[in-house]
Image 1 (spheres, rainbow, N blue to C red):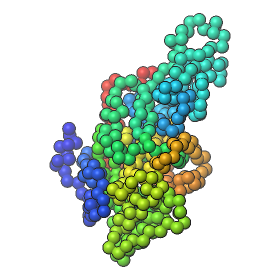
Image 2 (cartoon, rainbow, N blue to C red):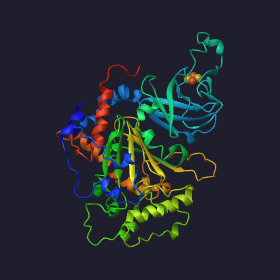
Image 3 (tube, helix red, strand yellow):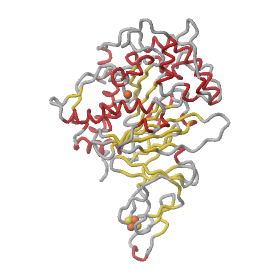
Image 4 (cartoon, rainbow, N blue to C red):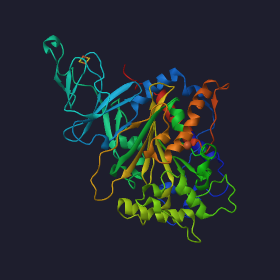
Length: 473
Ligand code: FES
Ligand SMILES: [Fe+2]
């Protein structure tokens, strides 16, 4: 493999001073070795072609060669807990109807009436059968035909011909995935090594407690890539600098489809002059501006106060407070959990568009998809949280879709995270438009902090270059 040769021959520069590994090594409790070990790989330094982001022909290639061949995160199990519950999931020119069966399994049908092609459903809900609102063709939950008004007029159509076509379905971690083409890796192979990593964090035991989406006037990749590096934080999110090791972050390439960015919180940005800044001040800024800080989940929020004892770091004090708060809020024993798994942004990305955060705090889960073309995307932010021990598992909350004039900070369920995403959004449309009018049509990437973007594009190229496996229409 060419990229492994490069990794052996090229030493890539890192931010001077302590790195990610040094920061977690100073914590009270070490994180698992898969977090602490350096798994960066150099993958080259060539510029990307800007047309990847706006050219309709490139978009068509994604639709034909990539999307049908990948496992797509389509829903969470708590979106459709009971038999008959259904979710419509649309992406890249396809519409799927995910239906919970009587035996608890989930099937994904193409959401198109086999009479004259009306979409069967446009919402999510619960139904015993799926009746087309145009002429009344009706299907059972298992995709078999149930009824045709004036069936005498359709003697040429057998029940077999009227079975709704189906996509592959797989489950992992409470996530439901669909893949249009039947052939390809299993979900465990596709996600590797994520399932082994997430055994600790058990997303299958979490439910969606917040879910907000908005259509963005930018390509889905531009929007996603703003959440794949912390390099932009110094300029785009200056209020985070007192407690964010933005340039200390680690970037690892983990598998064909998986990479990660670990950004430490509770430590001052290397961009700031650290002289005279106290560990107590770091904690106070963290509690004010960090969207996942313990105070957001503490039942006695007004009284929440963390004192940093002399000789301890902000990370140690925050870790101790979060262990105590997490045990009280969710139940269970957090005494052996690392600071890193309670504080840090452990942002995994699964090709092509699914990004679950790791760790034990309520986890952010991102998804981006074209909506419906190369110039727009739907970005969604979910927060999934552990169900407190001894309490029944609730249904997930529905999507709160923001209107064009609304901001992410208009969604109170996101807390201070909404304002952070609004800051990210100031760059999206202007980057999309900027690439269209770029003179040299080149996109340059940092060798270290933007390695995940390069890894993503190389994986995308593998799909676009493969022979066969095209969409079959
Ligand atoms: S288009 Fe669905 S019943 Fe006619
Ligand atoms: Fe950001």
